[in-house]
Amino acid sequence: MEVSFYLIQILNGVSFAMLLFLLAAGLSLIYGLMRILNLAHGSYYLLGAYVALSVARGTGSLLLAAVAGTAVVTAVGIFMERVLLRRVPRAELPQALLTFGMLLIIGDLALWIWGGTPQTLPRPEALSGAVRVGSFFFPAYRLFVIGVGATVGVALWLLQEHTRFGAMIRAAIDDAEIARTTGVNVSLLSTVVFALGAALAALGGIIGGPMLGVYPGADFEILLLAFVVVIIGGLGSLKGAFVGALLVGLLDTFGKARFPELALFTIFAPMAIILAVRPTGLFGGR
Amino acid sequence: MIARAGGAVAALALLPLALSSYQLDLLTKMLIFAIFAMSLNLSLGYAGLPSLGHAAYFGVGAYTVGLLAVRVWDNFWVDMALGLAAAMVAAALFGLLALRAEGSYLLMITLALAQVLWGVAFGWRWLTGGDDGLPGVPRPAAGLPLSLAAGPRFYYLVLVCFAGSVAVLGLIARSPFGHALVGIRESARRMEVLGYNTWLYKYVAFVLAGLFAGLAGNLFVYYNGFVSPAYLSIVFSASALIMVILGGAGTLLGPALGSAVIVYLENAVSAYTPRWLLVLGVVYVAVTLFAPEGIVGFARRRKTGSA
Image 1 (cartoon, helix red, strand yellow):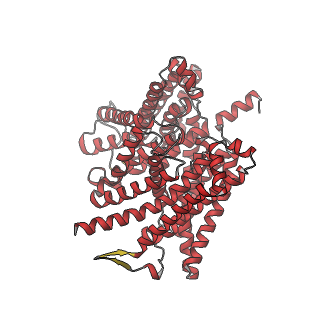
Image 2 (cartoon, rainbow over the protein chains, first blue to last red):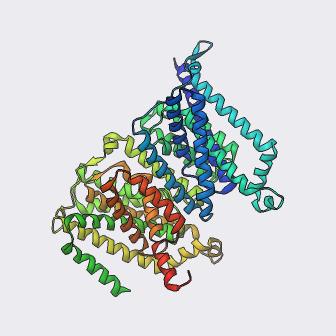
């Protein structure tokens, strides 16, 4: 009994952690390259899920829904980077105000279009059952989410460490001016990374939707947890986002199961401790 | 300067004669949020410490007064004093953690800390009433020579607090302490070389900002007769930010102007459409893009002709 409780909680925690990782990775990459703290990052999650919901209902195709959700959000991300964020000074406060404005706009528009009732995205037929491992049954969908998160994690790591594109990103993070003089198109690179971050957040909403539902306020809830992830892991570090996400995902799940009234403390207490010891997070540079 | 300030206060004191009770209510709210915005301006505008969690101290002050008045002892002086003390203690504790960080980390950490309090207010149902909030806070009466329940009298209480806050914050801004804060904002390293303990200066500014935010929270509870987790929310924290920026960060009365504009706008828009947050979002984007120096900054630039 006890063992299965822990196993299920761990599974829930890790699958939630993978969603957080999808958000935190984008948040972190964007910050690393552009020093932009995007408060609208959770809105990409929400918008992706809502668009996918509508397309799934309209066409019945989950694949089409996922593609449409990701595409719409990517377009919004590109618009924000090229049209809005480039026009404000490169300082944290104007960027925070601008992206918070977008958080309000997207959140209220979503409330207007999709209403205030919590909704659930349909999950694929093939993943709706349970998988038997030994004498335990695991929900297949959660295993699928873990698989997607792990795949994205490996892909991002390969991209950053072993491709020309990744080398350009690393060069631009180290010193954008020097990267530019060696022929790296930092402007284009910024847009691509911002779009990639937005797409990952949308993917998080789309695969998280069947598990957690979509509802007004989910944008800010997930943003806050993603912030805790990058505070713990360190902004700008992919490894930090992964480790931080696992920590927050597990703590949040166990906290909610064991001490429902203190759920937030189980996340924030470790955050406060790490902050006191390492103000820039476990893997953060500066 | 003093004559002008006196004139402004006299004008505000005479306004109840000219305004309807509805308009007076709105003006009261503007003054309360002016105190809130001016408090953030001390840490943000002068000391250069951005925060996405300033509602924490507003909310702690509000909940302290609300809980005391409803559950323990409805004495204005005692509740108010404890409300201020609680807000200051919260700022003193949070400041220890938050000021270890800078820039974007500081924004995220202040947000996260305020959100912890929001979570407590939301989840600790038997104490705080959870999501439903805590209704039934009476307008201050006990311990004052006159009951402040009646309309204009409460306005005068708020006006006195507002004028007092302007005076104290103005004195702080003009004091050596205030000048040192601006110096730290402009170049912390230089101030360190000059022998200033920059951390301590920032910390004191942070705690004082929390104290005045608590004052605004105390008044707002009496104003609404109600306290809810919304008082601790990011929307309140960000409202203070936009009021400061819209009015003009680092100017004494700019934030009060920003508060007047936002409170008026919310009132006017809400009469026509439930989409206030959408409009507010557009205001954030528009101010950042087109008026980054705020109203006061814009007016100054026109005056000096350097535009």
